[in-house]
Length: 199
Image (cartoon, rainbow, N blue to C red):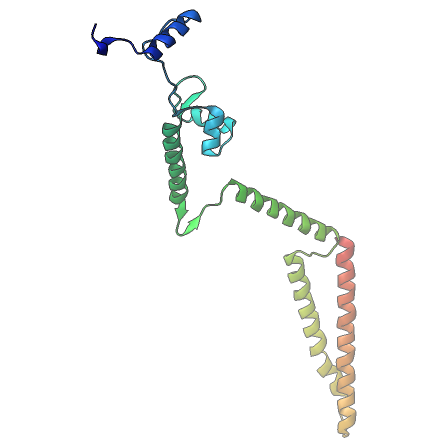
């Protein structure tokens, strides 16, 4: 035998130890690939939870074997997955406006419900009146005001017929106007009370 073909002493010792322990000698010891990781390690690398990793497996995350993952392939998949999400959101743009997500829609719905409850509460307290009721009351008030003001001139004409004192004419006209305004003010108070009773 040539000196080059002689086994190295460390190899002989390793072979003897494996036979002594009852293991079969292997030509090459199989080393674990450092790229292959378990689910907890992958979750830590991708900053996700293990349950989210399981969800992503359902969506196509590559899995080498049971509970083992190639970290580089999984990282590449996750980057492509996030890019697809970003593109999807960018495609939702319409005229510079981005459609609100599910959370924003819920907030908008909650605000709308709160506004409706406030309106109902104000209506129950008679703090809120319907627009058609206000328009009807305003039209009635305008007709009554017009009729009351227009009736002043014919009524005062006979009273002031022969009056020469400017002060007396002014006093009579002012008195008639105040009386008309007082009547309208009392009418407005009665209408408000009537609205509160019917609400």
